[in-house]
Structures are given as C-alpha cells and as structure tokens.
Image: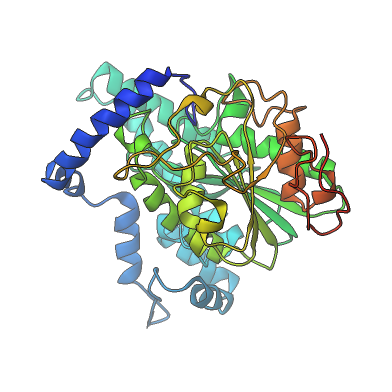
Length: 405
C-alpha cells in the first residue's frame, strides 16, 4: 500500500491534525529523542568501513563528498578496482551518489544477497516469535524478487522498514529522466504489489515508463521508482507534518545532483510524495524542468511561485479522490498549505479523468498517466488541460494554443 490508500473520512484527518499538536509538543520535550538512540545500521557500518579503507595504499574519498568528485574518483579506477570496492563495501557503494549507476546495481545485488541470507536464518530462529519469523520470510521473498538479474536497484537499505530505488531504462543513455516519488506507507515490502500493482512504486514507474515510450518512441527515457526515503507510517502525526518530507527532500536532491549525463528531469510526485517535492523544489538542480503532482495534500506553500524553482509546476486531481476533502491549510507546522489544483495556487492543471480515486493515477489508459508521461518526455503540446480554455499549456515549447478540454 502507498500514498494514502486507506480512504479515511475527513473527520479522522481533522482529528489527527488536532492530535498532532500534542505529539509535536511532546517531541520538543524529548519523547522523540529516544528515536535517535539507535545502534549503528548495516549501511552506517559499511560507510564507516569505507572511511577507514584504502585502495593501493591510498585513502578512499569521503563518501559524503560532492557527487562530481566521487564521479571523477570512480572514473579514474580500473574495472577491477571498481569491482573490488563493490564487493568490499556493497551498501556504501550501492547508495553512494556519484558512483556509476551500473556499479551501484552490482553493489546492491551483493548487498541484497547478503540481506537475503540474514533473513533466511531469521526465518528459523527459535528466539523469534512466529510473527517475527513470518516477517523474516516476507523480507527474504522481497529480496529474492529484487535479486532478479533483469532489475536495476539504484539504492537499498535494509534498516527498519527499508528503503529502495529501482531504474527502468538506461540512466546513462537517457535524454529524459522521470523520478516517481510515492507517499505514505512506502517501504521495502510495499515497494511492489501483485494486487493493485499500479498503486505501488514499481507499478507506477513501470506504467509511466511504458506510457513515455508510447508518447515519444524516439526519446530515450528512463524512470526511477524512488522509495529511498522514510515515508510516514499511515495517516498519523508524520503525515500531517513536513518532518518526513524535509528528510526526504535532502535525499531526493542528493539523488538529483548525482544523476549521470545531461538528461532533463521531471519529478512525478504522488500524494505525500508531493509534499517531499514541494520541500525539495527550491534546491533542485536546474536540469529539473518539471514537477508534476497528483493527489496532493499540499506542497507546503500558498502559491507555486513560492516554491523557489525554475521548473514548471503541474498538478492534477481526479474528481473522485478523497484527498480533496482534507483541510488545505498550514498552521503551526500542521497541514501542507494551499490546494495545488486551485486557480489561486498557479500550477498548470492537467486532466486526471478516469483515475478513479486516490490510487489510480498510474493506471494504464487514464488521462492522468498519459499526461504525466507527456510531461515526462517534454511533449507539452499533447497534454490535456483540466478545464476548458485553461492556460496550462501557454508559453511552452512547441505549443500554439492555450489548452484543450
């Protein structure tokens, strides 16, 4: 499940907003300080090992260095040396912005195999409860799926509920890159679904990739299913505030600054993912030409012009989406600001006809998916505006009309 799939009633959301006040106050007095007192994670251990590592007697660069410096470092190595680093520090290399995409795929394959073996042992650990053993089995199954040789895993962290990102297409050859940013309840186990598959990041990205190729067969496109942030768990306090979005925005901009080549980039943001994109917008690289949000609870600003970005801002919402009933406000850090599809907000409003509710925007055959794909490949003359005579296409490259119904 992802991105507000639970269809709550409006009064539940308002009650959560009120309760959030209490939790935020408690957080300032130290309740949440307990969350920072954690043991070192596997990823942190791999990074620490890298920081003390050497190659041919020389120290390795700071893994938090600017991606450009890390790119130069990896480019200076032989294939054998890059392979050696991937095997020695798989989680570090697999999550290192600046490392070549193909090397990250290899490193994450190694890390996933190691994690799969850990969960296989946990499945039969008598010290665990039955529920714990079952959870280990589910995680092992997910890792086995991600280990498919045809899959390109750009990021992987098994800690907690887990984080992951997957690439469809070739990042190195792409002329256009779309990054799908999902919403709440996104983690390793919900990254891909068999039932309602287009409501999960993998299904979203696959559908968008296919739609982009259909929209512009000659354009070399790539799509990233980006679940590499800790999303809110359900519609609790985190979903009502921007804390997770702020953390996610830092990670998202880290990815964007490290993308290879010169491809133009579109952010495609669903539900709480649009909050992440809104917070990230002021710092995105200039190669990000478009930010498209669907089913948004707000972008934490009152107007699109306040996002502080040169990217075009697009918004869509299906008429049957319950998200329209949440309070579009921000008060004391609670709520996410103005409605992105309102005329006052100033986004280019796209048709989302046939999306059928909150989780249906990536369903093949819908206006919403087709419009997101056309934005992704820069086919602005083909987008369908939400309203008659809407100016959503005005002033765009290759367009001569203000919009269409």
